[in-house]
Image: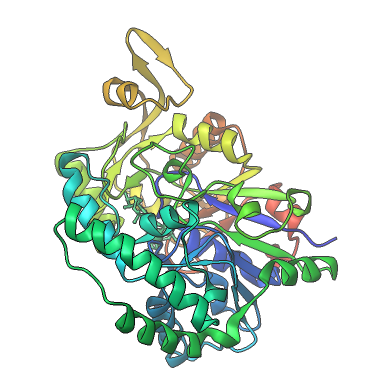
Length: 442
Ligand code: GDP
Ligand code: IMO
Ligand code: MG
């Protein structure tokens, strides 16, 4: 029976989900995005070519794979069309391969404006958003005033909803934020042009998925952002505004939980975070700079330097619990190749106690101290290793300790951005779901 699995970031995003999805895609029929918007930046490196996907699933780079943008995604149509054009220019075929949910909400021009204005107003409590308008678009969705893809195809309804929204948003922008306002006609004309472009792709994707699953197709759910940025389970309020954990795959596509067979987490061998908010194992000074430089830790969407930190076992165990990971793909091991000593966080010290369950409260997160275990570094290159046995003994020890801390087995170890810089681990659930993975990773 074909298998449907969910791929989820285990930390604060940018774990290498794009690369992992790209490696697994040849073994599935459909790839679907279910959360977030163009705040995501998923990088796939193919030889000398580098692709950064924002709203389109990373699976699109494999010819013939059907890709869906599900109802849980918020779509900036201008940015999506730009992404589509750039892929087509680079020889990627979209016709018959890309489907957009009619229920997905639109990011309107006033959403990025509200995003930026809100950030400015928040001052030192600002989130550090990507400024793409993703948060305000989800606000409108929850407030039941959002405009959906299907509305783009109905000019009268679109105008009516736009007029209502602008009356409200312009007042907010002008009177509360002291910011520029928007006119109906300019947006209407621009969005009707977008509608002409996107109409052939807009459809009932939940129905399509249901039919495809019924007929035996396998589906990969491509997570965006990550567990610690989830609206309910992340480090609120320093989070994104959607359900980025495994449950989001259900609500964000319309595929029932009974049709999902497994969850694969993606984690870096260390940690990074972009934007504000708590980050218990954050490194400072020269060490952070070194890791940032080795890992090229600059945002794929905004170019901002990413904050860097040690591997946090508490966060990973939490991610396993919230998402039910069956297995984890560990990325960027090579970035640690030149570290003499590595620190591994095994718990937090808080008000005299050692805690091992991630606390959600802002106060606790501000006060706690990570408890570290030192692990000897391997000080040699891991790049190009083809199987776990090829890795230096000390690297293997690091991996074993991580697995022990996390409590689930690794399925892939990534030692570089290229497709073939990937080690397949024996006896992992990934091989049970997709036995053919063995033939593509050797
Ligand atoms: P995503 O948002 O989770 O898809 O991750 P990003 O694409 O934002 O960031 C991950 C970055 O690390 C990208 O530039 C990848 O090309 C790169 N990358 C992925 N896996 C590895 C790896 O194992 N080693 C190294 N050095 N780079 C990697
Ligand atoms: P991928 O899918 C890393 C972060 C922002 C900010 C917070 C809220 O590439 O892993 P938003 O614009 O969503 O309102 O910003 O979330 N953030 C990400 N950080 N990777 C991402 O996506 C992110 N998407 C949003 O930096 O802290
Ligand atoms: Mg990213």
